[in-house]
Length: 616
Image 1 (cartoon, helix red, strand yellow):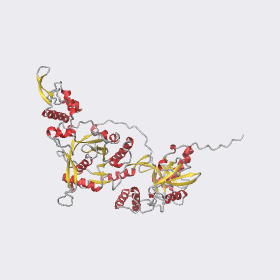
Image 2 (spheres, helix red, strand yellow):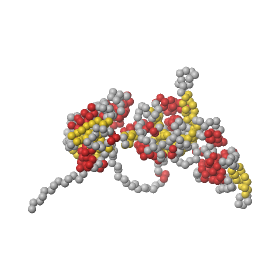
Image 3 (tube, one colour):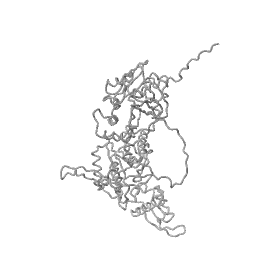
Image 4 (cartoon, helix red, strand yellow):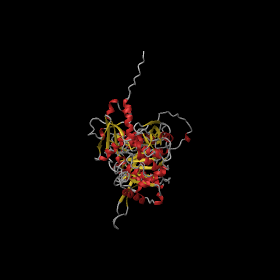
């Protein structure tokens, strides 16, 4: 009996092979993304929002094979037009169908795609084949979206810097008789070698370059090129054993300034619009770069820091006015600043770290990489971004989206070995500003190491301080810790500084608000931030308890104060603060001293609350 010949088994996953074929075309021919169209028989009215991007064959099923297509856009990479054009390529019965679906009509972009599919002309970037410097300038121009012929001088400087950093001459294909697969193995090491069925050229999949995984091949110009996967594989999770050692051997936290700015962390200052956030940051920046205690007149000199201030909204001229006004007010000289201060405007350079593309959120990784490179090159200690809202395009009421924005800036601080401080707004009508008042819910608060909140002085506080008006005064508190304002609040006020840049002798020109330190009058200083409600609660605790006036006594009234205000009496500084509070309240008539007998009948001085009003 003759054996039946074995029939070939059917491919159990035909969609896997289909995806890989389309992915190869997208990656090596059309410089695009693999997508699924809603209806493969009708793509005339399709837009980008109708497409579904897929990055792996597991994202589709066999039924989706006819829907596979390639989306190519950003044609400014290839020609001096079609910057906003999007072109879809789909194969019906093996024949390619090419349509432009978005952007200004441009026949050239569909011709380019069709030529690339048929092999008449490769779809390659404009800078391929140019000398290294010209090529780098063109790459930068594309990244910044500059039109043809518009090449600012700074592009050449930045291109030269990048080439110097690379300091690697591209290998020449001349006299190199090694096969493509041998060259790829030598350059990129491990990976899976394959052959493109359409071109017959070798490619090395799943290889690594600059810490990323991707595919490498020898390009049409004979040069090796590497393309990282859009989605990088996640390293395997592993548990790290903990080793207990001498605590003194642990590195101390690298605080940079004011116990708020800390290296490798994200920090934030939040407050209402026009409340002093930007002006306060400028005064702090001058204190950081000069090392002078500008906002703490009694404080010590500190190590000068290098600071990069990025105002994403105001023009450079306005930034200059504010810094010159602050420097004039604090008598800061050019020598004191030296080369430690950098300022940039979002109107001259783009600092958008996350974009909304259709239904997707996309982190602008090239921006992060460029910022990290510049921070390292300049040895920046602190980066201040003002305001956060102008550095992203995501809805601020989306807690998850805001968390990704914060994570992107945290990446900058970690990789740049610096502190990134973001200035942020609060929701409208938030009343007393707390950390929870910041836009984006708890997303930003959870990602920051330190968050400060700014609140304008109230009418009640102005009356306590003996001021005619609270205008121009505000306090700064730690928003992530349940602290009472009192002595631990930092108070500031605006000083009006004329620039004397007017057109005549009597015209003082622009007047700029500069933030300076302010202290409460001595009589009110200790209890400045304690509300009437808090004082009423303290009086109730002390009333009828025979609390002693003597700080040495275990029954001292100060312990009731600390309990009401959640203060730590084991801390000598806080215990001293409570003592100052009680002395101030006694001077103000809120408490009197009465002699009362103890359990032995000995008269002891006790603190007795005085209830002045009906509210007390």
